Length: 369
Image (tube, rainbow, N blue to C red; front, side):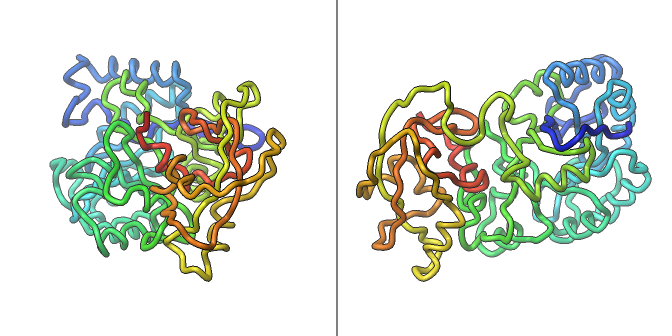
């Protein structure tokens, strides 16, 4: 299918780990559907119902099984990106996604470059993580570590220290897929926040791209992500994950404001305090680091003065993500009304301050009462 576009960029919903009927693994589609035609029809109908305009088909070390779903998606007006799921020599699962219309022979050749044979067993180990990233980036694909916080297959599970730092800071890595229904992986908050030693020139995009082998899986929180794009094609997705602050959302941006207080919601409480400097930065740099992390805003809904409140960061849950500590060098600000938590709400507002989504995502994925 030819990708579509509208004047200017717009938000679309995409599911980037859809399994074809031929997938042989847990919850294989053939366990629930008698034929590929039935599975494809049900899956694509559910995509339509949920407003999912783009899917990526990523069977383990296999692209040939995607042919029928690619064709049926095109006939349904849904863009289908072909690809496969790789398994690096370190045991990290990687979604390797190609542009719509890419010849399957080229994708099979890419599987070979990754150190595997097309159609080999799911658990077959391929080339090292960094080699797969480089080789697939050179071929124009988007590589996303899948379900990074899932044991055995996730990038953030079973590894730490310099090997993990090298993976996270690889310049060819732009996004990771987290599974919101399970606990965080090792150092997940620090990695997404870009705290040392995981600091990067640009933040990682955090997306939801859980395995989809049944139509009703598309209804779950982790199945899909919203991207702001000008075209429903891979190149636009690649741009979005390079600028996640304004182009990636884990909840429908049209339904929920991403920043600021909800004008329809009355003030619920007043909290004032001071924010400690970040422990990840030397004292001489802490001020500039905070200025990049938090942008001061005026709050027209409150005239309250900022007051000293050493435990403020802990109270509002910022310490785990920003690595805050008590320090003589502090940035003072006040917080009032309610802030829009992504994907739900919490009683703190960026009417007085704001942080980039890359800074906030670990908080958003933290289950708090």
